[in-house]
Length: 437
Image 1: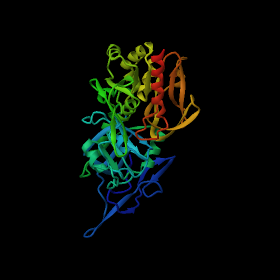
Image 2: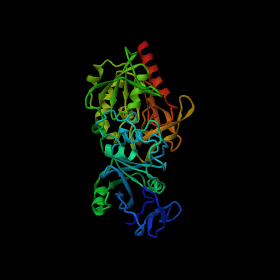
Image 3: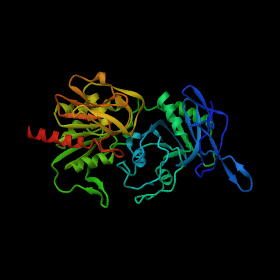
Image 4: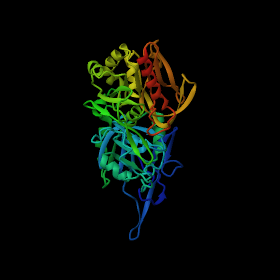
């Protein structure tokens, strides 16, 4: 298999084109030095002249390709599924989103790290957990941060969090590969001395079974019940807190929930009680919820649905207002008898157009999912409410005989536009209507 040489070193240098074939793009071989292809930089040593840099990072695909780059973040290796994310902002929120468990995120935006990192933008609820992406790939080197909220450089933060990362990769070419072949199983590795056992890495990548068929919720979700009070962030004040009695009590079932989802629920005057994904129907009903929220999360929904869908089915039969996001959307669909399917490249970004058929409006939304609800499998009592305008996949349902709805995208928008914040209010209105009945 060919070796794909990266595009730049972390400290810069002058281009020197190579000649070995790198990869096939659109049916033609891309060579080092090709426009939009790969190359290698040379650095000038005052005593020894031009020197070829040592590649300290590699991405080894299960299909055998080896992509060389420059390592940063955590030293070591990680196996996962390679996807690409088209968001221009919010890299820290993306990398700490539990829905990215067992995934290696390729950022299509070249300059990642410019605003640094801070403790406020972490989306993982349990700060002791390293739930989120296992690897990250950047086009350009990480620069020093330039933002008043920055507390730490991205490369240092990655190391602290245990995320293996590479820079100097032609992310456009890698994205093209994913678009043509689908998301790839791979091993990402960083060794400061540049020594890698490529044969062993290839074997490890090929042996990894992939996310299809994996229930990853136990590795990222809550183990015990807890209360949530934090509300949304405001300039000059940081995050707020809900105090006093709330209008509604919401039980949020945690399949890998993001902090900003819980904040927006609390912002709507809701007392939020977070329950583990394994909570029984008796345990949930004992909390006397006005509504139940089904959270986002990672993995194959069909596997998680084996224990989650029966519980949700009983909640729906009890006619408790229910709202689901992302994996929660898929769980609701499975609970009413629909099916899910793996997507070739998934949806990952903060610039996805979705149409809400209930309002007739098109929203730009944040997405992160590699599975989708099969529209053709929806039962008669599940009406499609949202649809992706990129590929026509299902992005939302509402039940006609139960107070329940769900969406595939992320209306909490962390990162992303806030076009869909109204869905949290829609959930509250559903609880108000149920209480008045």
